[in-house]
Image (cartoon, rainbow, N blue to C red; front, side, top):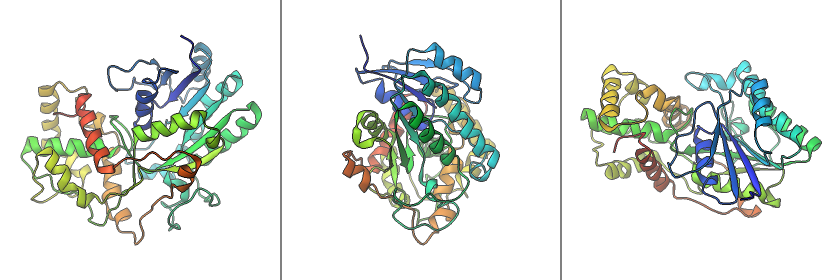
Length: 365
């Protein structure tokens, strides 16, 4: 069967990448190649090719591109982060490494002559909120915030090569992502799900481990994948930057009782100081080993399940963000006016992704 599009999804084992692989592999009109060091864990019914490549290796990337049928579309969702997460956002060496990883795969694709569109992921850090106060809501037409960020290295390289090779591009800036990928840098679903499972196993309260003032704007990776599909062929998305969210907001402290009800857990009791401290407990790690063995889970250790996601969730729930007088919220008017108006209920998204991780044998039932 002839395919009008062959999409390469780089960073395919991550939260965004796994969601994109699952979405595009269900579309009859697309040929899908997932690129990541480890094969993405998604639904068994999805059909795609996988190629294991280290994006830090420019020669390996060049050989990989040369070995594949012509690639018409690229979704770049790969990232390398530092242990503990936040410190890496200010690390110049890590910023440059992320810029180089992107160039290593984009450059040979641009030279191939077959590339028609690139979707590149940024995030709300583009507005500099991790450095200083910002005007809310954050809008895409604001001047670039002058701070060190690998987003700018990747964006500038995209614009440069697009002008030379004639492909289009779309930059997406999502908020807090909800997905089902294990070992990710930023997936609160994995952290919340593991916390719930371990509270049940240890007969501890599923008490809310954060600040009551925390407010989240979230994006289901299924919704983001729909936007990636739209951007791949829509003239309205060409060479544009779009914020994207589910379309609502969620106060975790308010939603917590609803999550607990769905999971059959009690919230009454003392929460841990934070999730990182909870998961570091020897008793907790031993309990996860028992759970993984009892239920035949695909991931046997907490570290491999969580990646850096527990640190990320602590950041989202902690005073550094929740204590701000004005929460960082994104305007999504531009995306809707361009023609993509899909939305999701964030609480339903969170519960769905928890269930999806159970279905994929990443969390116990």
